[in-house]
Image (tube, rainbow, N blue to C red):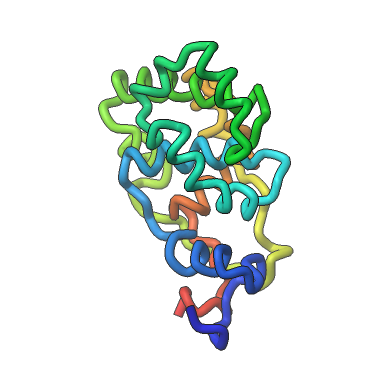
Length: 187
C-alpha cells in the first residue's frame, strides 16, 4: 500500500479501506462462493457504512459457516437466535434471517441456472462495464441494470438486494469499473 498513489477518494486513508480498494473493489469476480459471500455482505451493509462490514467480515466468515450456502440454508430458528447474540456481526434480525433466506434462494437459482456467476455475468455480456467518471458526484447510486438484476433476485426469492445494494455489489464484484479516471488502478 503506497500513500503516494492517486486513489478513488471514497477509500480515504483507513488501511482496511485502502487494501479493499487496491486488492478487491472493481476487480472482476467470477468465483461462485465469493460472489455469494459478497452479495450477503452487501445486504448486511444496508443503511451502514461499508467499512463497518469490512471490519466484521472475519466474524461473518466464521459465524456464517464460511458462507457455505448449503449449511446456511439449513439454519434453524435456534441458530438464528444464537447469531443474534454475536457481537462480531451486525445483529439485525431481518438481515440475519435474510442470510438464510438468500442462501435457499441462491441454491434454487443455481439449480435452475447452473451457475450463479454465469447467470450474473450474462447481464453485462461477460465483460465489465468501464465507466469514465471524473468525480464521485458522477457515480450513480443505482442504474437501470442494477434495478433489473435486483428485480430478478427478488423474483428468485431474495431480499436485501435492492437496486442501490445491487449497484454497490456490481462495483465490488467488478461487473462495473467505477474507479475514477484519476485513480492509479485505471492507468
